[in-house]
Length: 221
Image 1 (tube, rainbow, N blue to C red):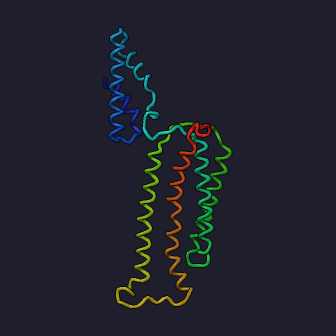
Image 2: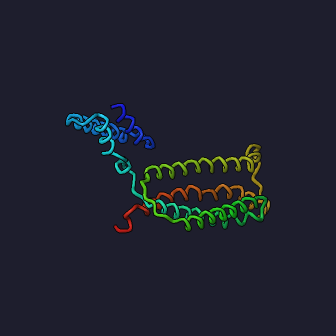
Image 3: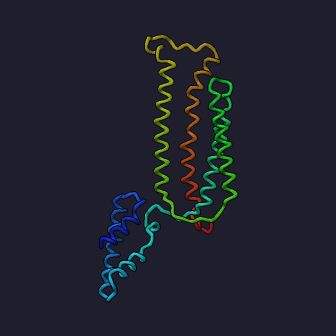
């Protein structure tokens, strides 16, 4: 019994123990124990009975709600392609920063584009079909987390920039004075830079869509 429990614990080692998963775990352990007891009652030795009970459940991925059989190689390639495209978009929209004091931001975009392009080319040359179960629930959770983290990041950055730019005027009750388009551009660019990072949660959202797209057998439906 202890041996079976350890085996079931190992099966669920990478699973998030929600109430549903916990119930499934207890049900599998109960069924395996019953199977082992039946085999022992038929005269089979306990060790062999335990081994046969384990063989009856070699994986639980297909039993977990939210898991899907996925073409891993194709999914990863399309994820890398999405990262590359978003890096290119980031770089293009950061080009105006070359004419400001924040040109390094645009150079970072170029570096990310080159790096992701190299990774994409390497992956296209190493295409081997790999199929495995991936969790849609986990992907959705990552997307939600990415949006929450980005939202907090943007609010903090925008709030800090606003305080540094307009804080003294507001504190001393002075009118906001932006003298000319150049100063306005300098103010706008401080908010523009953190806004560009919205491509990060957008990319995570794309991963979830690509996961659904690359479900094994989807092309035959």
